[in-house]
Length: 556
Image (tube, rainbow, N blue to C red):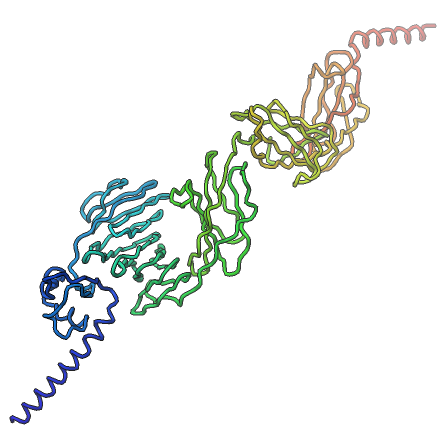
């Protein structure tokens, strides 16, 4: 019995020795620690009572520092305390940047309120940014998190452990954030971004985290190293790498971030609105995120858009001012690359170009000239008008650089396709951008149908002319004068003939007709034809004298 008890005790002691031998190795794997300098009179137990959340774990500190005699420490000696053992002091952040619509909810039961510069942001708060809005929260250790537009971010934990080490845990429900962590004295502070699908934990780095509507997460590292954990799998992202985590899946293997897209045709001044930008094609690029800001740092976002490769990036409703364009490429997994440098955009679109009004759906004019109208443009003293035979205006047919009215009629041109554009010129001579190019066509009028000679019967007049086709209708007129100032019959008909009652009044009458094509375009009238209605008195006298003459001839 005693032998059995002794053997059991031997095994227990051996296991404990193994455990104590292993503790230093386990503790040393904890890279997050605070280093303290021992002052005169310090004892390990006193230090642990002061800094540890559970002072009873002083032995763990001793093991971590490989102390043979924990009761014997010397002034100037440095002791490392694992950060996880240090008691935390709540640490508030402060709002250091606000742009647009940003709200805060102090806790789950409080109302959403407007967040302002300098406001304190504590543990348990939630921050929400609207469209084209952003905010930055900076903590005591100079760590900061930049919250982009359409984002909801919660602060789970924010506390300071020891004199230099801070821990911040955030929950990113949806949207995008950029985290910047400064190196702290002794060891690095730590930030963890938790999302519905994964967590990203870092030390001493700058990185981006985004969560889409499907709660999938993307992480991109700009400097340093980030660990991304999902479904019990952790990968390390180095500088210039990113990963995608679909909810319920492990992180994808690290992928290299795309370089910034190259802007084509960057100009010193942009005169046209909307602003349009095109980019050079790049392998691996699926789409481009572009944002226009008021500052070189890219914080005061005026507008933000995502386009597919080969599409134009367009921004509207901007006033004349200086802006900055930023862009970054997005690969097929939605991982965003490095952001471009700020392109300075000087916009001077005023006075605005005229909005040219057209009659009908098509700019097609009958004849050898065309007339255009537009409303007066504010701040425009005159206009610059160009008419060309090619859309790129390489062949200018007409040009007027000091046109003063809001109406322009071209000179005589051949029947063909042409293009018109107009710009506004201010009092100081500054000329803004061109209007939309207006294509127009000059077409010959439908031919004039020539009338046959009218046929006059006792009661009716009958006219006929050449049929010009099934799609042509006709416009017929009768007048008492050759100039057709006194029109007595005006009628549109489908056939190439007409019959009407003979007018009661005697005298000479004039008739003419024009053709109308299927688009309603009417050509010139034909040359007038005339017919005469004799007076009934003259007809009576002629009949009387004719009868008398016949009677006299019959008398013997």
